[in-house]
Length: 426
RNA sequence: GGAGAGGUGGCUGAGUGGCCGAAAGCGGCGGUCUUGAAAACCGUUGAGGGUUUAUCCCCUCCCAGGGUUCGAAUCCCUGCCUCUCCGCCA
Image (spheres, rainbow, N blue to C red):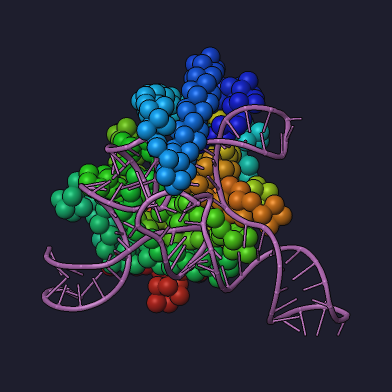
């Protein structure tokens, strides 16, 4: 949610900024609503004040043993007036709320204008794209060769866009997760966090998935409304919902490994082969809750933490700054990390690191107490994949493959694989 | 699943219709004292919003949502959550 104060003081600026999102914000509609809100709110509060004063005098008169009937006669009808005013106010506020919560975050000035992913800006590249002296296999063929990746059996168990992993391939994914967690905990200073995988609507509202993106979610219960998490961002960031955090506890850095569930509505026909786009996948997520002045630097650092995983795995990747048209609803600025996939002969997203400023915090009512002012202030939130484990598994398999289909195990993963150095095709 | 007890400020906890945004204690902040610190003492200390240049003033909030009433933390209804005991279970 955007700062309502900004709308009142710098409406043209907001309008111009939303235009970068290809959003035509109707300022007249807003101004109209806002003027009505102001008038009705003032009127309502005046009536409330009058009611309070009169009620108080009735109380005092009664205490003195006076006859209160004349006073009671005076308040005749006031309750009805107030009821009308209050419901009118509630209606206007509801409309205002609906308008505001549908608006995306304003983009950071450094975000380039553009229409879609083709206009994203490459910031850097790391690593050598491997040259193979043989025809490379993609992870689907490699997985089949190792009898470790079975899409048919998954489809039988549930439906399309799921996978069953077996044997060393399953273990390799687990090794990746353990390695990522240990690195973020021991080297990057994150606190391991275990959270529920089913969340309520308030939590999804807080991070911005609801009310706009309900169709992307798996709903598992109607009463109460509960959903499978699309990312650990939701439960982990909601740790601080409705909290006022002590200065001493800031900044908060949490890392969590969870499965993620996405309905992928509207993605039919995209990435139908393999592990790239599934309804369920494993991800290690980094979340930071920081002071306003620290968030930009935190964003760079957090992205660096995700990059460090790729570097330790020696996987070639590039860092991309998303353009205005590709930046997510809640984000003010997002870096994507794209790993090289030999099976596709291109870079594919493996991590998305976003900075939300106070956009989520305002929805979450997540604040910290600034010791300088003694007052609560909205925190800034950030998150990023560190990394998507399923896609990392794909990247390792494809980049580390040998001609006969064997897969070398990256050095850093070998301790997690019982000392194995290579996965042999049996 | 059955029975009972509860949800009040940063925390503990009093408050059963008006004098309550709310006692007391703890914690925090400021001060006195002290070379400094501790202790002691004094003062101060919830959040959100409206109006305003600002002060002032006003409104809302005692788990959430409804209701009763001139007036609700307090009474009624619904929901959610927590705790205790029993049963069951990993």
